[in-house]
Length: 404
Ligand code: SAH
Image (cartoon, rainbow, N blue to C red; front, side, top):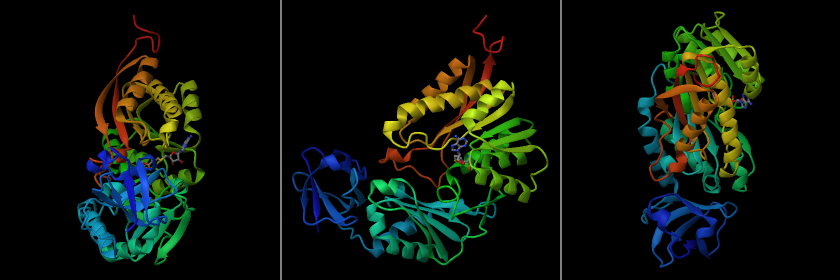
């Protein structure tokens, strides 16, 4: 088997079971390494560290499949890993919840592999050279373990380019993908696995959408970055007085309106707007609109560490505007799904926004992904989704001017 031998002292992260080997850590390549090939990763002194998938084009030069020298990377290995990931998700499904993430990449010991289940359809993202090399094996394992006849591939995420892989999408098993409808907390959503964003639905926000539904009763709600209406529909069902849902994607807004209709929630309380949130929040401010509950769920504003500073400004901008649009006692549920923006930085940004908005605000809840998106303790990079539930405690009497 070919091998990557690391430079002196570069084995530390692997000894802590972190699954990535960066290009700078590799000192010597033994044998011929092709993209996706299985390699042994060795310490400078010849110690075995892990068995990995090589990715010669990527800064992440190898991703560990197993730290066990006895593990053979073959079809049985993928069956075991997939079965383990799928088995403990059984509790995630019920009559009212027919969708969940089955495989969460590194956090399930399957680097580069994302699998979302929507009813009887699986949507798969193959995002690394190693996963690409085993794609058919992985599809077979998924079909065998889940019994799902339909598997659709959505490997069109930009990160594939970093692995030297072209985008790829289409059915890989069965056909079914049209007319797909899932239930989440008993609310039905049409999921467009072919043309929708990511795999078609943002399953990671499941628990937070329910929370918003529980908080929405009697409130005027603003759902920013609403996609197909997840937060907005929960708010409507939770008895919101009004819900304004904003997204820049016309397709998403149209889908959200259809979802409201199919759930019998199109009773005039909801308003659906196709607009850039950064601009629309300013318009709402200029119109002196006020809300009691605001959700900010932007897309990943910092795709890599290099974008963090600019992303921080963008997060600050929307959170500042959000704070200004809140009534006293109002709630702001604010999220970041940027891996490069940790919770400490995010909290600092939101605190800065509250200061600039001249409000006293309290954190009354910390929000994270639902359990089907686990975070492996040895892989903090997987901890991408963080959120704060903030309450406007004490606006200044003059509505913005500093204290008495
Ligand atoms: N809250 C959603 C998921 C949001 S994903 C849910 O519960 O399902 C982020 C959304 O932001 C996407 O729908 C995308 O179309 C939208 N978006 C991206 N940039 C935007 C912008 N500048 N203004 C408004 N929406 C934007």
